[in-house]
Length: 401
Image 1 (cartoon, rainbow, N blue to C red):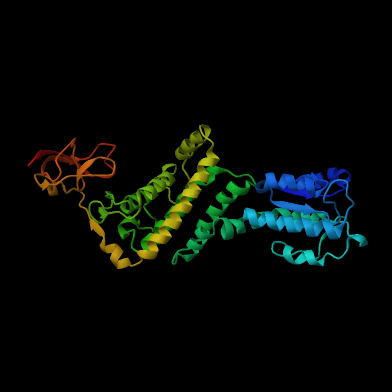
Image 2 (image 1 turned 135 degrees about the vertical axis):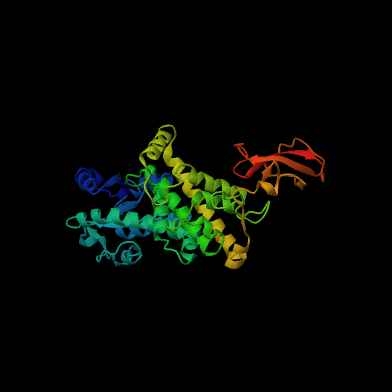
């Protein structure tokens, strides 16, 4: 339902009939007989409303005489102040009996044209109610999407528009759907439909990275899809073990640990092999089970906000690292089994940010060691430790040299 504030001093006479009509168009009318009462509601619940209907000849305060020339200028001025303070304009409409004593209303048409192209100055109560009630849901949805893209998340959508070589319309639509539900909660929003779609936005972003060489060809499948799991490892400076590549050498990475964590969150609830396909039955059951144990809409909202953070972060990074040849020069081949590189070799071990010791891509079980001391690796094997195997391909015992 489109929640709509309605101010008319004849509320008691009109409400029953108008409510039934509005219900048929998916509009929830919240009635007030004077602006003073309506304003209190709007100040306290501004973001709950998607439209406002004003009688042309109404009263500012209870008990006053109705006055078109005083009522509308004052109310529209206050609505403009609220819109500026809240960074969101609620579309308003004039619904009037249109009698001769309301005065000229042509001056209200121009500001209203920003969202409504109705040819007349106002809607007449006698014959225009169906037109108004049919337009409000359409305009409210359009207005909300416009505000998402041009005010609330302007930097995010400007960033998506700035990325060249990829059709970004689907990514923008997905983000608008989720963010509009977050801010305006209109319609029958079903979070389960958007977990996999947010992964599509991430795939779009990784394709942008591929264009500028931040994701190598090896992480793109033959059908053009992005391998999200392998790409995310590559961007985080880990070995993309199934593709035999990594970014740079030990300690090098593209994304920060925080961005890496946000990417992992976006990948967590989807099927790593789904890409643009729908969730399969097993994955859907897993997600539905997750919904039963948490308030899922807040989870999807948080993921959408993390996606916005990732988009803006990549905007800044790509602006400073847009040379494809230089970016691809950082891509290093990693053999599918290069244990010989470590077996019997001497290294000076290093401790990572999580406190784990390693020699390049080989984890070692060091508890303590003097700085600058070297070790010789032995018994090198595939790393099976769940704490470190995603970052270090091998595990080895050692002897202090």
